[in-house]
Length: 83
Image: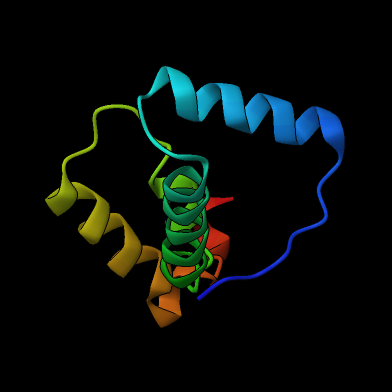
């Protein structure tokens, strides 16, 4: 599909230069960026997923365990005896 985009000149120049440095067309560069944004939006449907992805050196299994813990009903409940 072809479309027309209205981009600020500075963004266009930066994106065109970055695409050239990667040895790809401007269109392919935009396509990859859009795919990343769309994938990110789907992944961030959970409140914990956005910051869990940014944790350093966390295995996929550990991130899954954290997500499951934070999503559980009793995670948000405060045990008064702990305070």
